[in-house]
Image 1 (cartoon, helix red, strand yellow):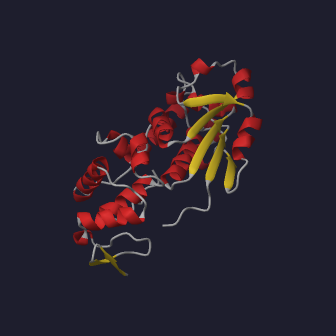
Image 2 (cartoon, chains in turn red, purple):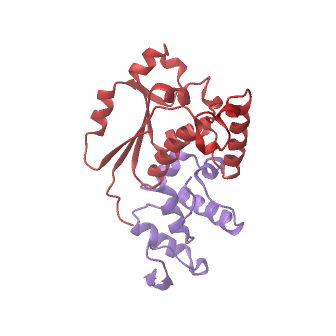
Image 3 (cartoon, helix red, strand yellow):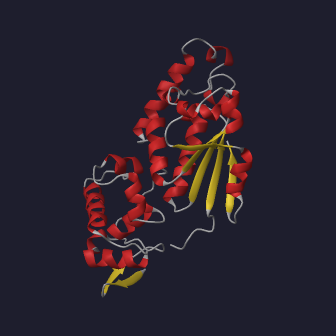
Length: 158
Length: 102
């Protein structure tokens, strides 16, 4: 097993739906498991995934999501999102996928670095205190690009 | 294919994982560790024991399982097996590489 050619994976997470948050987490964790550096920049709605009060209440989108295979009108009924989320979480538990909070602990422990977007933090009137301790800092996109400025680094927007 | 580790001929796959766990000995594990540039401390061997235990019980390994194992925390795990901890630890333990994405 030689060293990987890809050195670093940088993820920008801009959404708060469970499927997007897990996509970012699984890829960031997977990178670390392969010996690749990884970092996540949380912006816009992605910030929900690192807010102490919100991270365990993320949901699946049942409206505007054709892969749900339910009519959009039904997807908008009260309780539909909660039901779909509950079902999905049950399936995830079966595969030993950690809940969001535990996943963040694993990521942080693995050396994956977590950053919050300054502009989005200001826009949503958040403070560092609203975010989990594992978030290293609130930085600008320029700072994040500086972190990407090396060879064999990939950026991915989710 | 065959490979000689600790003066014993063993069967390995193209990535270097033992294909028959029965051929594994601690000496072979130590030799693989050396090749993988992992320095084996008592704590490393404790992790290998844990992996063997899971393997014998036919329970899947995952990073979450490691976290809950009580043997080691995630940070230590990455430190003890630098550069892909579960991949390297399973190779040293003489069992197949885990197929899970988490």
